[in-house]
Image 1 (cartoon, rainbow, N blue to C red):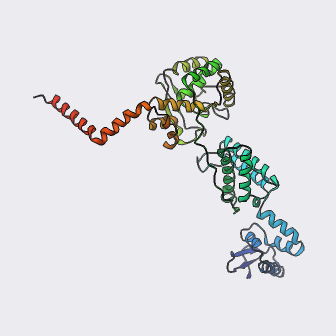
Image 2 (image 1 turned 45 degrees about the horizontal axis):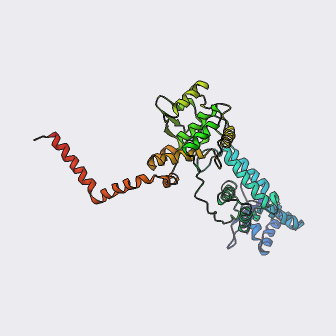
Image 3 (image 1 turned 90 degrees about the vertical axis):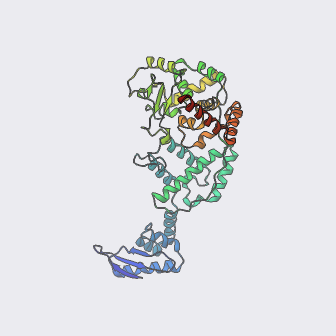
Amino acid sequence: MSLYRRNNSPNWYTLCRWKGYPTLSLSTGTPNKARAVAVERTLFALKGNGRRDILDLLATHRLRLIDVHEAYLRDPAALEQRVQAVASPTLGPLVDDWLAWLRSPGVLSPKTRRPYAASTVERYAASWGRLLAVLPRGRDGTLSDLTRGFVADYRVFRKGEGCEGATINRDLCALSAFFTWLEEERGEHAARPHFRHEEESAGRERWLSADELRGLLEAVPAPWRPFFALMVYTGLRLGEVVGKDGSPALRWGDVRLSERRLTVQGRTRRLKTGSSARDVPIPDQLAPLLGAHRVAYPGGPADPVFPHPFTYGQAQKVFNRGCEGAELHDVRVHDLRHTFAVHAIQSGLPLPRLQKLLGHSTPAMTMRYARHAPKAYFSEDAARIGASLSGAVDREAEAVRRAVIQRANPA
């Protein structure tokens, strides 16, 4: 150990190198050399007493040496409280800081490279509300309380409430995202509890038959029929039709009735991924409904196709009332997208084309609908595969080629 002075600083610094310890280059906080020597002795005492925890906090500049020195001499109990507060801060304010950071417009999600959606922040906040409710000390708990044992207890508690694996996993994702923020943004090297995610079901897949869909569209108010018909005939997500925050998602400039197609633009952060930007055909059954809707709600290219009162929340309420009127059970708005996908598969649409229409980022997301492929195609598919394996396809192609040549060069 040695004392030295840095340029432009009146205070003395100490440099400590001990085997197995991080190098300490710290300000003693005083220009008085005699006091600086006393401060340095405190470092010796801490090492001699095995206080590696305090030395690590000093090395990472989370504690000031002069503060540690004074507390060590005058009030050891206060020193322990200070070390505990720094080593494992209170969770409530820390989670509040994290959520405020997520809401900052300058913060970008590492996954989407866009600001975090308000719904994502709300979901994280709800998950942490549940986590803190189960934690014995709640918001007054500390980082050290987030142990593997706590996670195990939390799983048991949530399963006891009847929660499924997907719901528990959402809470665990909020926990993991919080620790990532601590490490990457705050420089906190907290002990992240290791945990495995719960097994999830293959996914909810409720879809409507043609009769059920007809009953639903008859049960909803007439002004809302083009809205829900658009969703079911194009497979658009609710957030792609009308924004969650009240801003328009689909504009009249995106709809080309004469060309029978519409465009899902990538100009807003509501799109889940880059592949969600796509062109979607408008079937003949949908075109007249949209045409009548445009007469009722005219607008320019930048105006929303569905202005107020067509909002995200109101759409869900109207849909639920329509399901009650049509006596449909266990149906959600997103099931209209499943309905589009299942009927597309049943009509023989190839999976790669369906993936493009749905805006899925990976084929695996679309494969969930493959089991709805009609069995009527099985024998036809088997015949095509067999013909290729036996060489019949090649012989047929050769016969066609010879016939074309013969017609071009008659004898």
